[in-house]
Length: 424
Ligand SMILES: C[S@@+](CC[C@H](N)C(=O)[O-])C[C@H]1O[C@@H](n2cnc3c(N)ncnc32)[C@H](O)[C@@H]1O
Image (cartoon, rainbow, N blue to C red; front, side, top):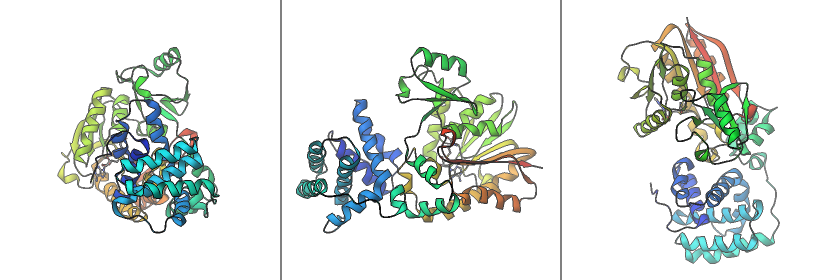
């Protein structure tokens, strides 16, 4: 995997490189975008780079439908990046307030930065032709939604009545949710500090530790360095409310990285003992970083949740959080590239992985204990259908209180699913 970004400072070349990484190499924008963002100091440049790149992911099928008839034949191999550059050109011309002159000339220059000077003439010709001609509307509902056909179809089947509001929310800019770290401050004093700093915010009755702020750089907010808050969507904040850890509990957080929920569980019950399990060694460092910034403690263990015999010490748990690996279809509004990274063939293996983790960790729960199953998915097969099957094959499991599918945009939250299960 070549994760070396283009040399120099050309926003369009950098954006094309990110789009190439996502679409051709299967690398997430979360992994490769920071590598180009870090080149730029000006917030304006960073925002622009982010906006144009995410905009292309949100409108990709429409942009591609415009480009396809204009190319005599598709570009192949490394040259494919020039197709992505052209999509960036189209996106600026069709959806952004960039002058036609700048959009065209700067995009043509970017071809040189991408070591494809020989294709500058092609880029120039296509962008000028694009400016002259009509841009046909989307040919299908999936294209209009900016989604691959398979995601659109699954959502249309699962939520026929709510489809358009789900799609609107998936394509809207998400709010910035913060979670106040009650280890270090209180919601009252944190919101007071925000008011004094002139930062506008709202709070929510559903989220005792949550604050939504308007736009802004969170690293500049008072209390950031001191770990008085963390960024966490409102839907994810419900995990600690629903699991409700108590003093003295022995708790397993069995898919823990980067530790967003581990640190929240700790803040709720600092006198508990938490085991934070994570499969990927590379992601373990993220749990430790988050815990040290927020002042949380847990025993961090590297291991596979579906193979407890390889890591479990035999001490039963009072509460288990299973924040399962999933399609992440609920958080597409925050990570628009997910819609292109995920493939329809990923879903069945994910569903069976979730089932095998559920079956493997259920025996680790004490009788009377609670397991909270969570995903950031909105596909019923990973959520309600998964839990229905688990309840049917597990005689000592009952659903208790929470069975909730949150859809993107509901109460300003990401799409999420929760089921609370009690062991008799
Ligand atoms: C949805 S994320 C967890 C997010 C985390 N709970 C938080 O709130 O910050 C799922 C995590 O599960 C990990 N994972 C995937 N399969 C696993 C397995 N078999 N055992 C343990 N962890 C696993 C992934 O590497 C990923 O870090």
